[in-house]
Length: 161
Image 1 (cartoon, helix red, strand yellow):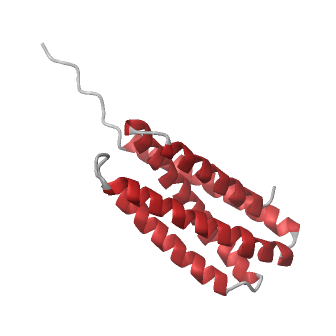
Image 2 (cartoon, rainbow, N blue to C red):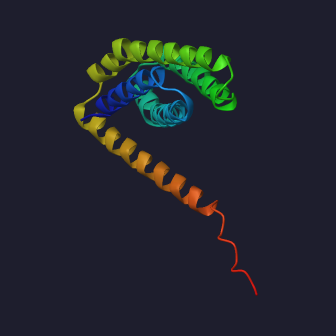
């Protein structure tokens, strides 16, 4: 599996989450929206820190600028979605916009950017980049777990009699 294969796998996982959101409601829907937000945040970070700089090194430039703009719009929409209440009528519209933006972005990357990079790069570099991406995911999850543990409240002291 190369870095491109990993990114495509993440695309499919997000597609699946969007499908599940459409048939969910209430707390399940909110949970799935959180998973989409996390998946897209991780994915964007991997592309921005690893894939896009590598693509620039391969001589692919103009497409990258457009991809960064797409990411900024997606991040803004995610932020909006996470701030609205579950009962807010705008939630469905915002989710639909997010799904459309992500679908267009993914389609553009998989039809244009990824094939271009794949044709210019050597396989070893793409596998090495994948390893770096997987390590970054592990580091992020470990630091997130540590942050969560640090913010847990201590149990109340035992009652004195």
